[in-house]
Image 1 (cartoon, rainbow, N blue to C red):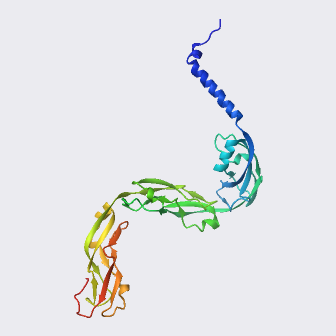
Image 2: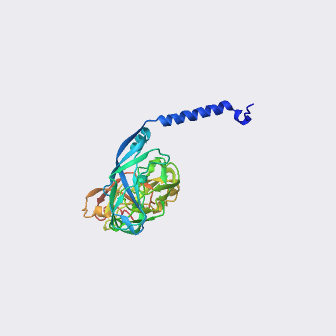
Image 3: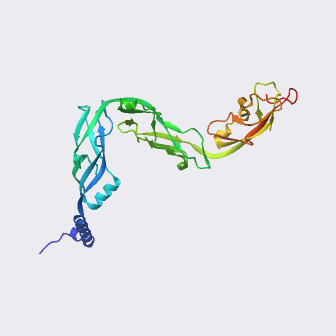
Length: 324
């Protein structure tokens, strides 16, 4: 009499369904269309581990063709996503080297069922030159503006401030800084710390360390503060009272983060006219000139009620003195 273990009978319907699904999936994989196809214009990237050398320019040729075989769907996806042939150079033996390309240097992705049948051409020429390294500043770029209700409460922080670059001497000597990828200010909605990668576009053959930098952004709600009746100072090397200004005072409207506006001392804020704009004035002449404001901290926006004033040259004793 046959004996069937109870463990095999337990949930036998579920186990039978799972077996059937596995067989179906295996059958689908086996019957998936397969073909061979050529992928054009695949870049060749050289990774030099020898710290004494750097690749000089791009390999020749810089693009190759791949002959792939495997499931049609995977070939189509790879063609759309793109791939590279990554050539590892552990040690440089000659400034000019012909490197035979290996099929396992093609980046197919983990779990890929594609096979590299051939590369054309099968070899590339790589030139090397002595590598140098130096430390250069890291530059942060921003684009756009913060949302209208926000303002920076302090300058944007950056850590570290410098990066080490290594590559061909001719190119390294031309670098005065390295750039981070652009910080999109419209996307900032709150204070925080961001990790932004280096922008390596145009730095082929140059290694940058670190690969990213930390950016700190502190924002607050944007508010306004009005300083009323700030005197307009006019001086041009003339006797006191030789110039009159209309209007004599202006309102200065400050806009920015609340903590920055609260720190502004009204007596430190001065409205004045550039003396160079008043040179050569004759008695009775008047000029309409812009008003400048100083004594306002960075990151605070300044507006003036009436951006211009009228300055008039008067005869001695013809008007009461203006300004200090």
